[in-house]
Length: 483
Image 1: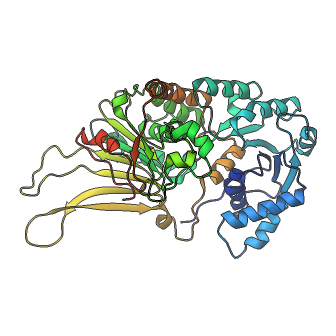
Image 2 (image 1 turned 180 degrees about the vertical axis):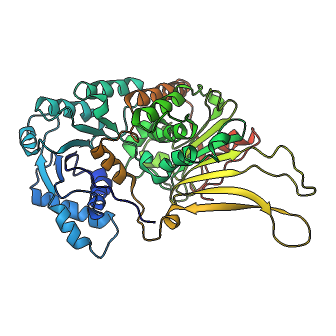
Image 3 (image 1 turned 30 degrees about the horizontal axis):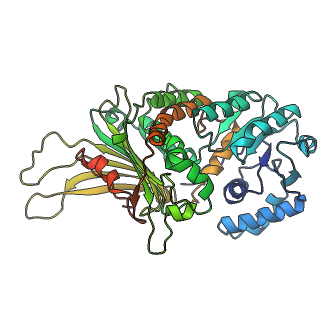
């Protein structure tokens, strides 16, 4: 099976922060791939912008280097890349000053979709939005894209929303969370709402618990200053894990439209119970033999910032009454893996003598690195000599199911094209971001009042022992990271 490529309309995409790391690693390679497969029309233009004084030719040379470094080689890439680079322009702009804005405005076309991608720090969001409005670029059809972190608490999130809404309507604002662009995350909605097999069972009557894991094998290299001010709770739970929780727990929307989907996600966040301290385990990776623990990386032996967190969360509604959702994320863990595990309840009665306990089915939704879905089922172990049961997987890998020659699409590719289409389904709404902070803020405030230190854990492990106890005391076990 080959993915269908649906071309988008002609557009002018202005990329602020075009010389930054995110633009080089993700955004510009994503745009190149969309051009390479024929989704980007020949009339499309990409205008890079930053404070750095560069000629357009120098900018194109930097983009060529980035694409050659961060994308796999293909036989036709040299020719295609040359054509793609001709779509790039550059203008130096002072985000908070007046330099460059008139030149930028003069480059934009009136008859093309207009999108502004802010690959910059949140402190610049409102200032850039004001400049776009004051120079006549924030037209009613324009779109503005902002990256996380969207604030560091409810107060700053509200301020960011107010700054953006002063110049753009809510339907023009795209708050990007790249996890929502992953193929498997979207397939979670298809799995639930396009298959009559699962949705009738998707409730407290049939599901014992849910585990959501986002584990990283790397540390905080290169992000020390930012990470020590944020920690795993702000960096990962408030956005990525809450979004995965919403998609897992949400009610079926009345229709598959952006606001209908996001209405149901907000209801999940507003239904989250406060999390007591006993249902949280915070960790910090310790030194290994090389002396490169978290405290060494941030250069502060007194740091209380967590590099790992696990929580036991409850959604207080009829569908999920009594079903715990276990969330965990951390750095320097055993493997890089993101997955959602839906553990169904054990059969209420076994008719098979002398086979031991029969465990409930397990649905494993893999987000990375090998995107796919596995359903673990119980069957008779083949062979004579008695009746034995065995647990086997029904396994579907997207790479195999959709054809071995199909290149996995990066989340940014899908999300940037959704911006051009004007489809906000996979982007957070303002009230959604604020609701998540309203739930997270009291948890962080409790830590700061008590000045608790995170529990140390070994690098390459599954996190601190206290995280294991969150499930052990409930008679459950975490699924092993990486397996």
